[in-house]
Image (cartoon, rainbow over all chains, first blue to last red; front, side):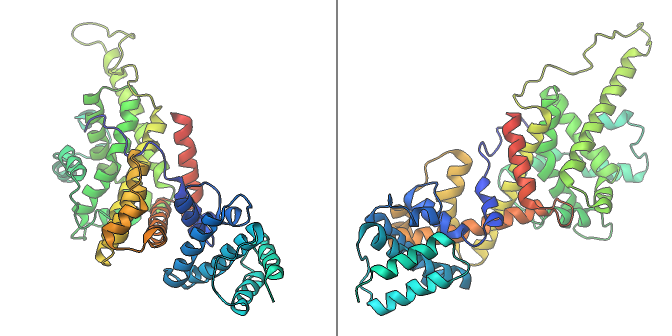
Length: 135
Length: 278
């Protein structure tokens, strides 16, 4: 054995995230990887600084999670955040980024708003988006 | 060999067996560096410790070898950072594993206490060095055939050649060992589950950049490589594999702790200690 350099110079601190916030860890990692940001999923989804294009990317990310998530909880989270991505573009940029019919979309927003696992910021976003939907 | 003058070294057939087992640990460690694995190389620490102390186990020797291989680097780093030369550190590390870890059945005591294994090993190597220092000092102070020894002798201790303090050096290598173990386990698990794509994306986009500082391979490149539908699919596969890595790492940390202790807290403590020791 010699004085070889250690394998890591910077610890893999993200590994602790799964213990700290098991529900949102996957969503945070998705957002951070896709948008190259340090912000959390909730922060990005509820920020008016997030562009329409970024909301579109988020929508595609969470749509994928909704259909192909590893666990049922992942797929449920994907469905909620898919709705939140559409709500964010609508609330902050007045843009509807989906071709889904209004009743279907309103139902998705309602499910987001009543999900007790969702943080208040996303619930509020869903409620605001609901009021902006055309009749 | 340090064991020659250690009063606690067993002088029975057991000692000869241990000596035989310890014939050339350096080559064992180097074998690991080449990436080769044996059946026990991905087992968890307490599982290995249990097996290594079970005389009736057919895999006892392999478990002992794996334990030595896994923790050699941390012990060596501690000793080297304590100011010993490279060759002295190698001898002392070998002596430590021969005399203390295997010879005095440290693992039996570890199993009995179920304490934090990192603390146990750290404390044991610290005591071993103190014993070594006292022994060398006593030898030099004893009037030999050539007269009285000098109190100014350095007793083999040199100015530390490493930037890290000994405990930080130990912790640094300890974390490295945990990460290497986790990497091997996750790779084996994913390949066995026919998820080579998950492993490849995790390795190219997360592990290699984290461990070497290289740039992550772009999503588009990985999508083409594996025939995926762009960023969303690549990112979702990535986070699934990343979560598996994180959970495996935490499980491995948990395996070195007292039952019920928080793996996150232990990791956090280690990371903070690493930052403070640099």
